[in-house]
Every structure is written in C-alpha cells, then in structure tokens.
Image (cartoon, rainbow, N blue to C red):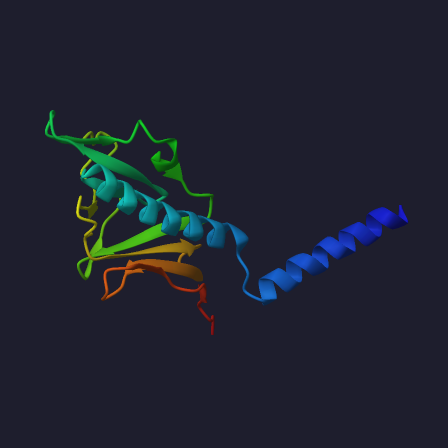
Length: 162
C-alpha cells in the first residue's frame, strides 16, 4: 500500500514538473517525425527524380507521389515511412503556403489528392510553414523552409495565458 502511494505521488510530481517546464512529449515527437519525414521525402524526390508532395489535413498529413502515367497524385505505397499519419488527439496542424494560410478542412466526399506542399525532383519545395499545435495553439512547434532552402524545426513555443 505504501509503495502504491509513493508511486502515485511520484507520478503526480513528474507530471507537474513536465507541465511547468513546458514539455509536451507527444507534440515534440510528432514534430520531430514530420521534420524527419519531410527531409526523407526530399531526398527520395532527388534520388528517384520524382515529384513528391504533402497533403496536410487538420488532424494529420500524407505524402503523395505524382504518377506521370496516370497524370495524378497518389499515395506512396512503396514506402511505409511515407504513409498517411494521423496525429494524436489534441494536436492539430496549421499550414501557411507562400505566406497564405491554408484551410485544411476537406469536404467528406473529396477524392482528389492534390498536395499543398510540393517537393520537386530537384529538391526544391514550396515555401511553407506547418505548425503542429496543442489545443488551439497553447503549445506549438513550427517546421518551415528557411531562406537558404533548408527545412528547419523551431523550438517548442508556449503561449502565455493572461
């Protein structure tokens, strides 16, 4: 019984310290994953001389490849790493493409898969900024292309409530 009480107290202290220090492991893990996958898709585009893209949604994202024979975008079936990803509950995406905010809500019956962010065969990409946010932007991590053409991950930001 004493061990159980000590365990509960320890868990409470760890959770309290994590919230005070601004750590959000799910948000950090998902932003690291997106950052890594964007760089990976960019490398694949260059190696395979194929056009890749990213289709963002409110609760996730999917990497696509342009099928020249069919003349359309399709899911990347040959590479499990670039499959569709759903973000954990409480984490959403905000996207800005070429300085314009993008509405990510798609109609339920939408069948086209045109990506908002293009990764060209030469490694160039659409100018973008994707922010993964916790519960309406209280905490966020932004991934964007810098002025040198590199994909960068900005540190976790925490909005201060008045």
